[in-house]
Image (cartoon, rainbow, N blue to C red; front, side):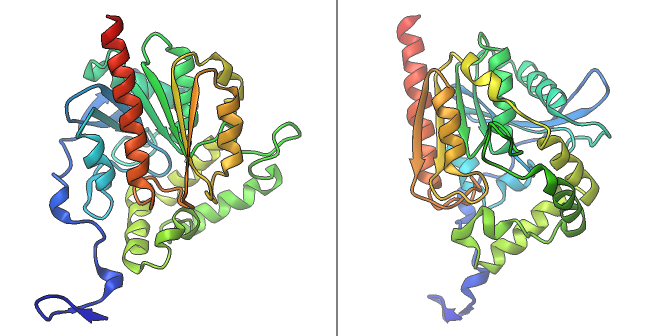
Length: 306
């Protein structure tokens, strides 16, 4: 407890870590309807090369622009036309009973086509990186470059993949997700640098509750653990940037190195951080700078070749 310049009492744990004036507020939410009748929410803001942002888990478009975590999207929109979506099953999109990687791939393509992004860069974070990897492998002529942050190619451990969750623990994990949804149990693991900040922990709890119901959250996790995109990695012949925190406790750096070694045109940036959450990472500015350098250099190369 202390005092600010006016003499008012201030509790540091309640201070919003971002200046609210930095955030212009969430751009309008728009919807595109899939052939099977599912409404997919998306937003577009900024000018420059198209950057299609594929979120991880959980996600909620409005929360991504709130002052306490909005610096990421604010800064990205300064040098790209930023296109963000909520996958079906999360956030402002519909929550149908059946979700999985094929449906999420359809969602990305629907949004890409709806906004007229002929050849965007694709940024996939966490679980969104796995989906983005497959999307890129199937659309090499439509993707200018791939950016992966804090992601992996498989979630369950196997004889030929020594990382991830023991398959025998899956049922327990799903039960805990549903029973403890909205308590922010994942927050100290995903963002150690902010683990002691009570304000941010409460906001993350709220974020979970807004992003999904307990059953929807468990359904989403079940779909994630069915993914294995390792076979797609050698097929990705577009420039790829792999960014990962060295001390990430959610997705280990070894998983990022596994992916980078199998991506033909990969450049790797390893951050001196333990944080997995992209929008609260203590290395967020370094990450954004790496994305800026990658995107603008590729865009300049394309202009030179035109």
